Amino acid sequence: MRYLAPAFEAACPGTELRYADALGAPERIDAAVCWYPPPGLLATLPRLRLVQSLAAGIDHLPAGEARRAPLLCRIVDPTMAGGMAAYVAWAVIHRQRAMDAYLASAAAGRWQEEPIVPPARHRVGIAGLGTLGEACARALLALGYAVRGWSRTPRPAAPAQVECFHGAAGLDAFLSGCDTLVCLLPLTEQTRGFLCAEVFARLPRGAHVVNVGRGAHLDEDALLAALATGQLGAATLDAFVQEPLPAGHPFWHHPRIVVTPHVATRTDAAVIARQTLDNLALARRGLRPPAAVDPAQGY
Image (cartoon, rainbow, N blue to C red; front, side):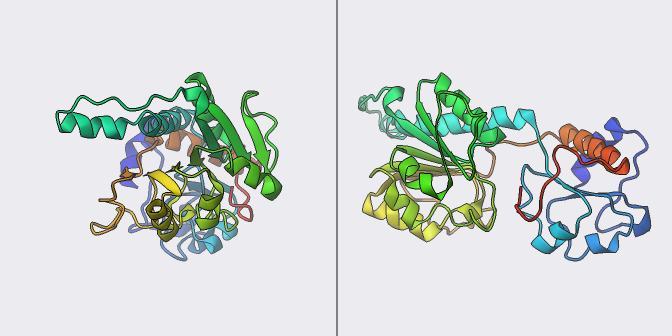
């Protein structure tokens, strides 16, 4: 995490920074900024007031560590929403406008048109209508796509043009109208493996799946099987259970899978530093920051 040091020093000169391999006196540490903390480390910090995740979720933290945290916060970065919306719009357009076919034709020196389908006739479903999901929905609506969304509970603040579904009762109706399915769910025990054979079977034949959530959302074997039968037409994947994706993994050379190295969006170090310091200031006053997470729910 040493790359964060300049941002913390700029945001609060004189901040005392420690690293997992050189903690010094543990009783002097107020906040832990974490990705994968060494097992048991947080329990050794008696003065700890805040555990700050480096991401918009907390699924990378071991459940036991998360539940023992006195206060656990995620990153809420408005600039992440723009980056995610740009990536998802690209992924949808790349497949819906047959850009993969055009790139292959250009490489072969072949002038060949592909069928053109208006965006309004292509239905994009977003599973997960949080901050990032809503930003993607707005971007796709602006491009003329028909957008629907699904979430665990109703989302009254979702854009009015988005057809919304929620809960187990609404999942079938949601999936049946997704020419492209975008996964932006938080990773919880309930959503782990969400992109599975059962979900793929409920999509229209030939659908496109975009996973910009977490690698553990995806059943990799089920994806390969659905692509082999034609139930799925393509997949765009940015998150994987094992990262970097191993060199011999079948995703690398699959003709209908696009792999990107977990780059859909990133949080600037300055945003992490500022939010950590703000959250710590609130914690010291006995207040709960807006970005505080309920470890039992996972978000």
